[in-house]
Length: 86
Image (cartoon, rainbow, N blue to C red; front, side, top):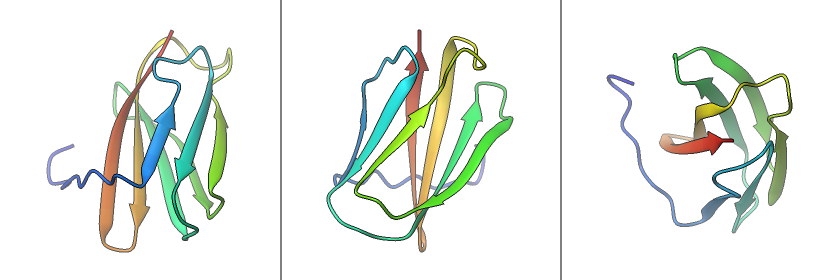
């Protein structure tokens, strides 16, 4: 994550954390955002644009238990969240 400046945004809520697979991203406003999900080794496992106020992600049985990094980009703002999968 060298070189990435994280700005934590109060209008983004990611839950439940830890999760058993289903993760929800709840936003206080509609906006075009891009979501990147990386595993603990830095491998990108998802890249998706979204604009819904509530967005559902399934880290199902295809994804191992461990730590995932959710990177949400909106314009020049980058928000990084650590999510634990049981």
